[in-house]
Length: 576
Image (cartoon, rainbow, N blue to C red; front, side):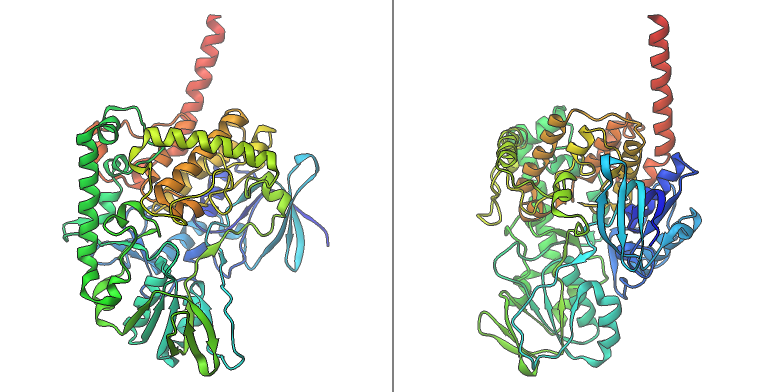
């Protein structure tokens, strides 16, 4: 088959892929660019086939959009949260309005990615179609595109459907009227959404959450006492300052007060303790044994640590439906799927089920890269003993730095396996990408042909993706400089250590930044010479919720920075 050739290939049509394509075309309008996605429709996790009734984003209306493209005000709950249908329509409209739909190839699966000789670009093998070669690659498949499917011992007599949560909008809805008893496995936000959907439909639910591991999700209330939207509070720089982020401006007087004085540390502990109490009061964990099994670890401070992740009860009346519904929570694991559709648990419990829904998360979507290329691209650690020793040394030094700057997370409160990870191993943690986007080794070689957006976990996905796109595209085009490789690797090591300390299990698995999205965005923009925080007084900046619209005009601002830099350089040459 003849090879197709493009200037740019974007893999994925979710938030990151769409804004990456749009941003590249802003700088190079004539680029021969194509977007590839194996799904049936545009939208990533918000595509037609992934959404379903009662699916709501954990974010308020006005916060879940690109800075320059407002979302229609429809499908919004009384508390201000956005429906999946509204988000799907937004992304479909965005693609159409910016000429991306006509550049998109759906039902197109990338099965292999190879680097062309001498770093001349990339070759993508496409299932059932000719291969594609490109000069630039934006690999935006994201962190939620490859479902994890656990394997259980299974009797031939077990014939109930076993469905991953990613198929809720298709397979589960198609049989919802035919089933009565459902088994849900997992404790991520998708499990909470699935349990709510089933209880709302009047089904009996057995909810299985393993005893070992990170435990249940920490769930925020939709509002604080019905007065303030919780996400408005989280989207303030004050909460970021209270949250032990390594990306904060750590030498300022406010940071020093909050993290390095007795009074400031007491203020910080009191704030997080009060927020945790509000969340637990709203959830009503004490109302039943089943509810108590959903209390997040560590007890009394689960909201701060977000050990199993952080969510918001964005769907209307989540806890009311849970407490009134027929749901039994089991803190154990499945041992056998037996005959007559019987589920057996490790604690000896047995029950019959009509369906099993696996809310077991997603694996990294790096499978098209072979092992050597994964290491070269920073997608996986190098097993070479010298490399392991190098990273162990860097992470050990980084641990001392993080401990000195952020004493509140010096000693995570949970024992192994939750609170400890061996330095230098990074077996399943955040990819080794500078700024969570590019491989230090490739970048140091002058290779500006690829970046990897969308693998950071944040509640502000659209704005984070917009900042990543500007940083990533200008990197591809050589419009901003990077530090030497050792400095980039030290930044990677510092992030990995901080992430494990700050978010424990989540930080060991992912580039997790649930309270740190504003400082991450500011850091990316600072690399480009952009400061969007100096438009208002400092007090307003601390306590006013930040919205994407506050970052309107990022590309224009970058161009102004370039022009100012060019003029300064010319003036310097002239004066010399």
